[in-house]
Image (cartoon, rainbow, N blue to C red; front, top):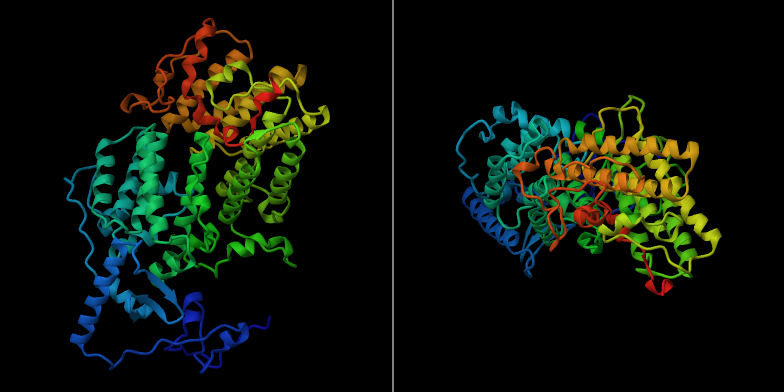
Length: 605
């Protein structure tokens, strides 16, 4: 399309239309429609200037009324009065307010003060200089931010902490806890208490709650505080859905014309969606609340654009879902492809029958493989390599590929020749091979699919980047492939192929150990996999003490299944009668199978 050239060369319009303001592009302010709106056939509207319209007293009273109404909305998001973004501005009840008015409202609205916390080495005040030099915040950005990049970029957060209408102290407190965990490999009760104190000072529907609680939930979960992690996640989802964070208007409204902050709110919703799916996959449940929300939030941009502050015009979910029809090879961000992978996996799992019969085998192959292959085949050339030209890994694409492959394994394994070893009875995902199996050719298809996905996972883990530093949510994905590979060692592989598989198992366990050095839940899962591997492969020796994982002596173990016995001490493989009961917590790392196909017991009867 022909590039638009402004007729006002070397000048800046003092009044841009609402459409151009929303897109953060230049506007030539032509009347009745600017050139850009004319070219794109958009509705072109301008906000009326307030200059000279109200005196200082009237403006103060107007701000007070709008602030009171805005506060009431944030505290009661399910009431009849809601923030509705339209072409005329934001409608607060019966009074219309422009974008400039809303900026003034939130700049002058009173926000709760941070919780007074005794000043010490772990809990300093978050001043400009303190935040810039805060070692724990820097540790967060160095070690964790790129794994789940939804918080504001560091430089932008420093500015926002001084100028924004929002109170980011709860988010910063969560960052400091995560940074402390990476620095010391220890849990901090004082930093955890600081997070909860800061969150408690926010209004019930402050959107910063979503960011702070989401980050805090991840730290709690992988430090084995499962119940507390769920509470934080549920609260984050409730606030986000109540505020309609999943809608496009939310980011525009609460971003206050700041392109980075608008992008930040978009990322917050989509990361909430991804982590919600990750919890469901890890725990083997389909308690995937955000899946049922219809989002209109635009897709995140590339990480480099976000960090630099040059946020481009965002693409939409509709653009992504119709990418196969684009005449040009449109490239989306890595974040967008991860979102697509989560949606793809969830769709396939929901489409698959919970209790599969022999007749379902072909349908599962067609539906699952079509969705997974489409995601892989539609990747543009620039997004297919996970290892970038500078030798670093594209973390979000790494997660997306792992997710696609673990979902493939979970869907196909119950119908494959990779049977579940009896030691896997400790897991709710364990299945006995049916007596009346599908046709041999279909078994081969399912088995081949699994082996290809396992091999793809191994290739990702073997990328020449060390140390192995990824999100702890890779634990369940890598473990699922390892279980399938152990089954192949038992039932399929021989000679050289078996030797290669044994090396691959060593690789997967080594990668998980690297993650387990930071997160005790992963460390415990490594011990459990080692025990199962010894049993499956017929090896001797002690499995070790599961209770002795790094850092686990400071927090209670919540990995075991509710109502089951303690897993503090695993027996050696000479005690086969007790090995099943001693691994009751293993359900937490093989949930992706449990989310998928369940074999029909009538096959066995």
